[in-house]
Image (cartoon, rainbow, N blue to C red):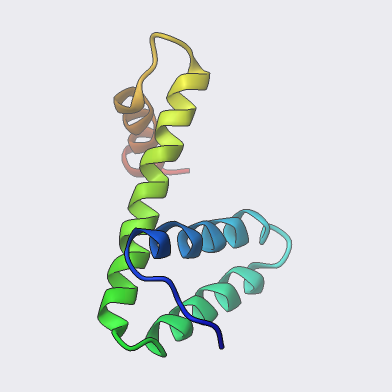
Length: 97
């Protein structure tokens, strides 16, 4: 097993891998869960598993922020991240499908 990067370099790759598995698992939900379990097991095998979990959470949060910024840029000049968050809240929390 190769060396595992620490710090900021470790945050986004695992998060991107998990979210890519999520988007690719529409026809095979087990693919997403297998990926999550592997990423978690890889983190648990590191010298500092707590740091690995924190990096994963930070990576997912960072990826969400980056995604919101990109969506806001593509939605038009009158729509920002707050508007997108409000729409997500309305669609999934306030009035779930």
